[in-house]
Image (tube, rainbow, N blue to C red; front, side, top):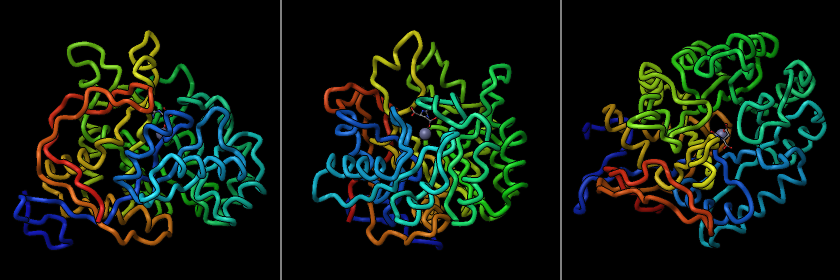
Length: 362
Ligand code: NCD
Ligand code: ZN
C-alpha cells in the first residue's frame, strides 16, 4: 500500500490501525425505487454519500417537475432526520417530453440533469426515447442551459450482440450526437468497455463517465463461475476481463472525467432468482468498501478522493462537500441478504469477505 501520499491525506495511520479518510463522496447514479423498498434502501446510500443523482425510472417514470419534487420529498421522508443527504433529481426523457418542462425544472433547481434511456434498453425503459433525433429540440435547450444529459449507452436492436451494444452505441449514437451538439454536457453512465474509456478520454471536457463498483470488481467469467449467478447480472452486462482492466485503469488514473456512480439497482431476491431474472446489482450497502478495495489493489488510494468526491461535483458545477467519511482497514463479511422493509434483497458481495469497513461521516 502506498502511504507516501502526496496528493491528499487519504491514508491515515491511527491507534486503531490504518484508515481511509475522504471528503464525503457523492453517488452520481443510483436507483432508490419507491414505496416500501425505498424505505429499506435509502439509508444505505445516505450514510455513505452526501448527495446522489436519483434515477427517474420509476413506473410510471419521472417526467414532470411536480413528480420529481414529490419523489424527492418521499426520499427525504424515508431517512432518519439527523442524516444530511441531498437527492439530486433527474427527468426521464421520452419522445414527448417538452423542452419547456425541462427548462422550468432546471432553472428552478428541481432537475439537476435529464436521463436518456433508449426505449427498452433496461428496467422500466419502455417509455424511453425511440429516436434521438425526435428530441433534438429538447437536447438543444439542454445544451444552451448547460444541463447535463445522462446516457444509458446501449443500442437496443435484437440483432446486435448484447456484449457489443455499448461499443455500437458510441459509433451509431454518441459520436453523431456530439457532432451535432458539440457543447452538450454528457455523462456516459456506467461504462463497461475499453471503447467507452477511449471515447471519453478523447472527447471534449464536456464529456465524462461514471463507473460502478461491480464493473471494476467482476467480469463475465464471474457471472458464470460454477453456475449462473443472477446477482451479478446487470445492464450494461459485465464484459471480458480486458474491459474490466481498462475500467480499473481509467477509474484509478486520476483523470477528472471519470467519477463514482454506483448504479445500485435493488430488485427483490425472488425477481433475481427467477427464470427471467431482472437486471440490477444492489451495491449501496458496501459501495465505498468496494471502491476502496479496487483502488488499493491498483495501488492508487491517493486518487480515490478525486474519483469519489471531487471529479463529479466539478463536472456538475456543484460545491465540494465539507464533511469527511472514514473507512477502517478492518475485515467484514457482507450480509447474505438484506431486509429492505420487508423485501429480501441480496447485496453485491453477499457472504464475501471485504478488507474495508465503513465507519461513518464526521
Ligand atoms: C437498472 C434498474 O434496475 O433500474 N438496472 C441495471 O441493471 N443497471 C437500470 C439501469 O440502470 O440500466
Ligand atoms: Zn442505472
